[in-house]
Length: 335
Image (tube, rainbow, N blue to C red; front, side, top):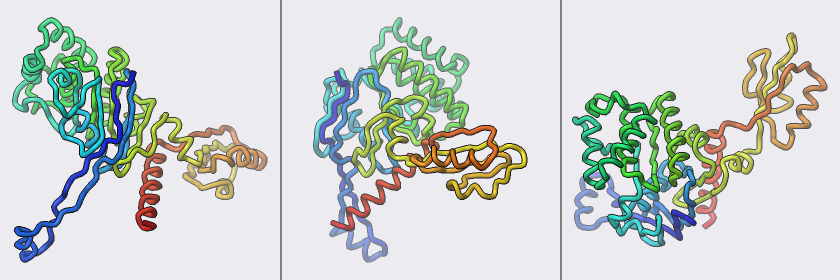
């Protein structure tokens, strides 16, 4: 049974167009010009219980707006959505007790107080049974290794430590659905990895449903099997992570470990040279030509080792965004 059901969801805004100059500003007091911005347009999506879904797209694609709609923070212009049988923008107390929203660029903890004080406040807001509260806090404290930080003022914590506290606060009432908006933004590699490991362990342990937006593809690769790509407010892809590479990348990376003394200057004939660091050569080769190209190389050169791999996910996603943007521009011109 689907936990999240979205049908033809749309959200648009009227944006005031302010013109430059004093005269234009005065005229704007009496006659204002607006343009309509469609942040989300005709999205339909279904997410099953226990899924960990990545929601990807370039800046301004509509990802955060969609999460705000599903959280009931804003109202849609049209369409419907249900999360665990609730219509989010009705803001029913029963619904608010069953989900959590974590935004990497917004804080929900009191800045000058220890995080534990904010946790106690959450306990009262959500009316969590003291025994359940302590058991959940102990579990999260162990998973995130934050025992020594609970009584330290939030303002004194590092960015990674604060994010651990934000996640703890969001999960104290044991939500069934978790919306994550850029949870690792600004974190260093070590902090990113620790957050990823925690989210993976916690989701597997509790089997909660998670919808994640992130610009870090390592988050996606580490946590999500299903990916939904949204650009210009519309869903362009919904499928497996591996399917993105298969569908949108027509090339492979071929790394050759050459035997001593082998020349490296003529490898451009086999594909696009990515790098030459003797005795290694890395080439970009069309996917359908990999077998033929390797046969030609092995027939002419002494090769000690060969590695064939897909391009980095970040590269494939960036190329996909560029392709979709170009197609949309062409469609607008033709219309």
